[in-house]
Length: 153
Image (cartoon, rainbow, N blue to C red; front, side, top):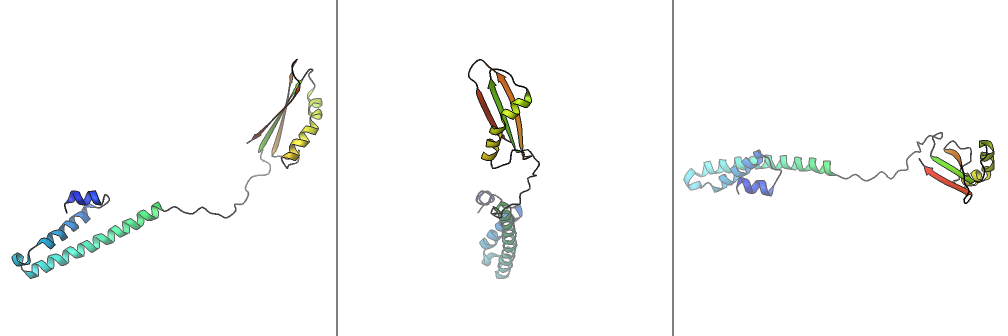
């Protein structure tokens, strides 16, 4: 196997592992008749030792990469509610379309029953600090009525 084949087959292989793998291949190709049985045996033993060290390092790297790429299960435990009770969570804007303009106090008192109905539909008290009430009025010659906008913050 050549160096290019090793890099293509194992993209994350280090140059050190390539060198050791090629050394083992070379040791296996050595002809014991040419170099003697003792030299052949030493070459094979050295190559096997280098390959074992290389395989151990590859296993360590693979384990490290597996830990990095592991997908952890989501924690299914219920979380404590950390939302502050005084924080505004819902803004209710009530716009009244009328023929004649009212002063602000009369506008708010006239919309009190609507305010109570909206708060109860949200399962809250109308004085809850998480609710913010905004009132406005528009004088019109067209259709009269009331527009309610509920915004979650």
